[in-house]
Image 1 (cartoon, rainbow, N blue to C red):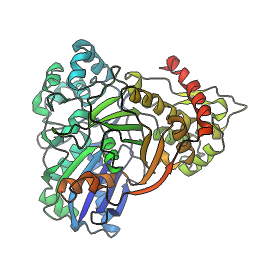
Image 2: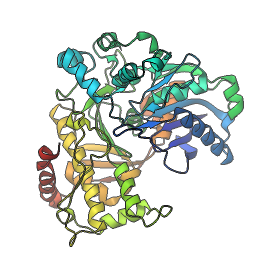
Image 3: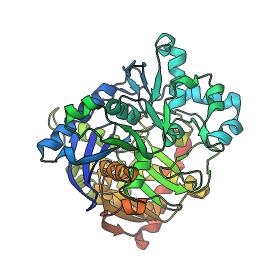
Length: 496
């Protein structure tokens, strides 16, 4: 019983095939072999070509076959994807424009305008937050700035919805996906039609809404034949990358917390309350296991500049175009500098508007740089510290609204591969960190197995999930990191 998981990120697409009987991956790959391009036609914009996502996915399936995975044994597909992106197609699913992805800032003023005009109460009562820079605001931007193109729109989808539509030929979206778009009414447990009316957006562009776990569609016969799937393979799961990361770590019940530090840095806490921050610094979405009988929401903190900052350091510290430093080398550099990076502070806010600053673009860069004192080791460690401090700044807000905690789960990947980063994280947040061997693609495969009915519960779907290590804060470092964080935080009022 094999299940395919696909994790559509902004840097790459990962695929994994899960043997549901053992709970272990039998094959995985990442495509392409370089980081995907994010195009910025104007400052603050961020776009990608959805057709490339599909082509890379097909390449990934071929790589799995080349690695000896019997694709014909796959029973269902699960899809995880970068959240908040906008994909627009005509009625034949032809792409009308590049996708406006999650870190694109152009629609933030539109979201703020309608938030002010209709009032905080209107939006917080319905979608628990401002439309901000989410998909609904991006759709409104296209309507205002590209009206002739907008007239051709038949379907508005999130990135994972488009990938699913390429498999099945059917445009669909999910309930949790609509909550990511600021288009889910948490009180009515339905599409937020009053928000569509407030933004003067047509209902007709919203495709069929499906449950996260369900027999959503069967892949089209010509796609099955082309890729080597059996003809009855179904799409049985889809979710945004952060809810899916939580599922991959078996974080599905109130009080459980997941974190990740990929392109962006995220802390994601599950709650049974319609929790929200009145200042919109953190956001609430439907978690994958939300039902009418059992409320499950995910409270999300996002810092845009995380892995992308590390990627930037890797490039600028390298000596040649094709000789980028390895991430292992950067981690080793960070270990050579002590806590506090000899007074150097890094503010990782250089990847679009930041939610924790009310969707404003904020200062990014180094503070207290001393040319005679600081080197690459201090810069890399200061970057790690700055990312964790920014995460903790939002984590304090989560704790204030009752969505915090003292135990966090993470995948041993991206920045959590770095022992220095992990030390900074546990001692700044004062949480216990449990590291697991998994990834988003494997999580999507587990979701597919549950949606197919092989696993009867999400606890069952965690079968085979491997705990690698647990790390506790060090009492002797608590005051030191408290002071370092406070010094960093004191400048937020200046830079934000």
